[in-house]
Length: 462
Image 1 (cartoon, rainbow, N blue to C red):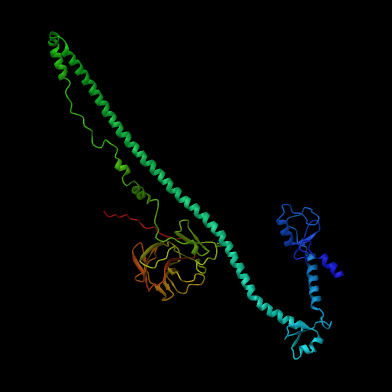
Image 2 (cartoon, rainbow, N blue to C red; image 1 turned 180 degrees about the vertical axis):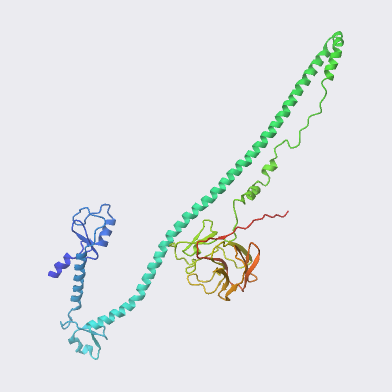
C-alpha cells in the first residue's frame, strides 16, 4: 500500500506515469518537461495545469524529484526481478537456456526441465543484455545515420533558400545594369536624332525664309510692271524707260534645288539597331568559357559573385551534397566536356600554391581522389605534373607564370598547359579519356585564382 501511494506521488498529473525529466513551476507543482511543453504549445498563456497560476516559460529542472523517481524505478525493477514462480511460489533464481525462461529451483528438478541447462538469473540477464545490445547496435547506428542525414537535409533546405535569394538578387543586379545601359543608349540615340532634326529643320527654315524674301521682291516687281502695262499709251510711254530699268534690275536667279542629305538619315539611326547596341554592349558583358560551380566547392573556398574567381577563406557550413568535393580545397567548372577542344585561361598571379587541371565526372567526390585527376601543381616555387595514372613529374621552367592556359582536346586525348602571356608550352598529358571531364581548380591561400574572359568576335557570311 505504501508503494502505491509513493508511486502516485511520483506520477506526472498529465501522463500519469513516473516523472521523466521533471521541472518545477513557481507554484511548487511539478510536471514532466515534455508533457508541460506539449500542453503549453496549444496555449497562449503559460499557466500551471493544476492551480492555473501563471508561470515562467522556462521552469528549472526538479533534480530532487528526478533522483527520487530514478531510485523508485530502480527499486521497482529490482522487485519485479524477484518475482515468484507461478507454479511453486518460489523465487525465480535460475534461467532455463532450453526454454529461455526464468525458473525456480523446484522447476529445475521437475520432469519438464529434465537434462536442461540452467544459469543463475544475474548471469543469464547479463549474457542476454549483451546479446540484445549487439542486436540493437546496428539499429542505433542506423538511427544516428538517419539523424545525421536529416540534419544535412535541414541544412540543405535552408541553403536552397539562401542560394535562391542570393541568385535572385544577382539576377536583378545584372538586369539593372542592362536596363540602365539600354536606357542610357536609348537617350543617347534619341538625342542624336533630335539634334539632327533640329539642324536640318533650321537649315530648311533658312532656305525657306530666303526664298520667301525673293518671292516677295519678284512679286512686287511683277505687280508694278503689270500695272504699267495697263495705263494709257502716253503714260506708258513716259514711264517705259523706268519700267524697263526696274525689270532689268531684278535679275532672274537660278531655280533653287534641294541639297543632298537634307532629310533625316533614318538608315543611320535604325539600320542594324539591335546589333549595334549588342555590339556596344559587349564592353559591358564579358564571356568566360568556364564558370565555377558553387555546389562543388569545398567549404573553405569563397567564390566571387560572377563565379569566375576563387580564394581560400574561413570554413562555411554547407550541405554534404554528392557534387561537393570534401577532402580537397577544390572547385569544378559547371560544365563538363567529353568531345571537341576547349580552352580556358586562369590568372594565378602571386599565389604560392595552386593546382589546375581536369577531374573525371565519375570520380567519387567524398574521398581523396587517387585517379581520374590530371593537373599541374605550383608549390614551393616548383611546378609538378600530377596524375593518378602517371604519377608526379617535376616540370623544369625558367620563370614564374602569371596566367596559365589550359587546353583540352578530348578527341585526341591531350591536356596541355601553357603560359598564356608568351604562349610557352609547360606540360602535356596524353591519355585516352573515356569520361566527361570537368575543369578543376585547387587553392589553399587567400590569393585569388581568376578565370579570364575571352575576346568575342562576330563574323558573318553573305
